[in-house]
Image (cartoon, rainbow, N blue to C red; front, side, top):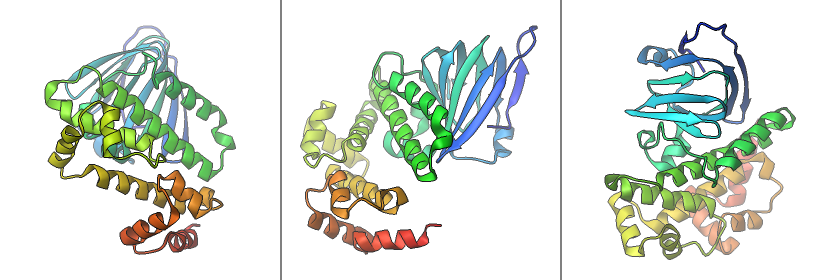
Length: 293
């Protein structure tokens, strides 16, 4: 997680514990500490081994304060906060216990937009996905040593999807008007991610799901140089590529895999896939298996 500039803020003896594990693309660190100020500076960032990451802090006990991008979040037990790989400050209280998730920034920004829109925002206390996120990652920490590499990678992907869903819920609350259109598009994209397997998902259903007219949603996508239907098909094809490349999915017939990505029939899937990637789905799977270690 380092380097980090640390200082102890109490006259009482310091007590702490750090335990870390890599689970697929996730690094999960369990931390117990008391009255510590942790600061990420421009200098410490230059000395980092891993970049292009975000840090999701799940407060298990105690409380803390997080400052980034002009916002200050007072984080209580049960709340979740995200900090980007930019200068920030974290101050823990007494008897602070938390999980810190380090995950790639690209999947989050692809679905939710720039991280500056959601850093140092607390979420997860008012039902929704918050309790699920906490229980999922606490359970994952307990069983991670029993997982195969392919299972660990799938669990990391599921965990990232849960974080995206939680942030999308948070962004739907009390959104400043200038960001409203951006957040609607982000919510729409998050809904697409959660419902890729539904073959009836189309622009009309998507607009109804996020509570706007189809015309308004089309306008918002067009402002960003995108078309709703193109985005849906793009994400379905990208999901199919991920599964065709995953050794853990090698036993799944291509027809079943295509249905799971929202294609109504295998012929339609094969045609769109070859138009996009230049290979049939079966040839792509064979090539991916030949390249895997």
